[in-house]
Image (cartoon, rainbow, N blue to C red; front, side, top):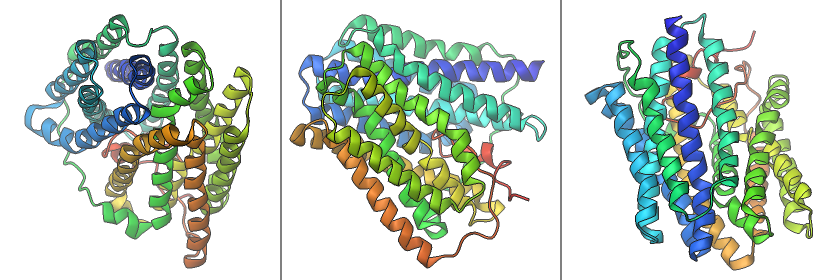
Length: 408
């Protein structure tokens, strides 16, 4: 019972963090439009978030080692609240970018604490159920977060105050727990070169996953506004992307466990190119058609990271899996920093369709590189089990280590 209560507290914090952080991205984009920010300035807000995320992933394990899990969680949640509330004090795009760095720090740090706490509490018997619940909570709350902007007016102090209250509320579940803090595990060494040495194709895959996911979630509201969607429908447009990605996990995972993952990666990218091309070229789509195209886009692009990670783990040893997961997250975070700003520049220059043209180009490069790599290396002799990999922290590999075992 006490273990169940611990997991409930952790998952409730995940929900509240997702609602606040997942809502601030699209809200900032729409608020930027309302305040007259340029498309490049709006894209910079998304890039700043991932810059803070990158710093937080590196800093969080060290801060936990110095002050403990609970105090570190309080620090990061306070930074997130300050980052949200600061929006109501200024209308400067540059200052908003600095505030988004604080929000990125909050998410990376808070998730690092949550995942470290989960890792310390799960056993071999409870790991499967705990990770299933964690993934479901993460995806479900990410989906709900996209709908938040349908009820929050852009560039309004009430919207940012409510999100700040939700972020602050994430403190309560862990602050009220009576269970002792877990022993701090050593932070995984961050060796980006390990991922490239293990699988260049996996690195390319996570970079393209960052290009697709980060640019769409941070700059997608600009596309929705440019094609005439009101904020309420932009919320469903973004939610359709997450829903499509969630629905893809089971069938794509089933296929990835039975066929060469490089084929799966290539054909998913081909499907993503088709989806992006249709969306970029189609004109006069109804709102329902735009939602459907977003769902198909999510279905074809959301699993790319997990497929690439599974392919990398097929080519490594058990004692390197945690460091490999951290290295892959490093490359994802690096790509996610650049993607929103680059997408916004192209949208400002060529129009909203440029978002999907950019993503299609990234997937085309991945297809070509995948074919080249298939000629350079035979399929893996032993494959690990496919699992949906949350893109949360450098330390998430500890939670997934029990699932990254060779298939019988």
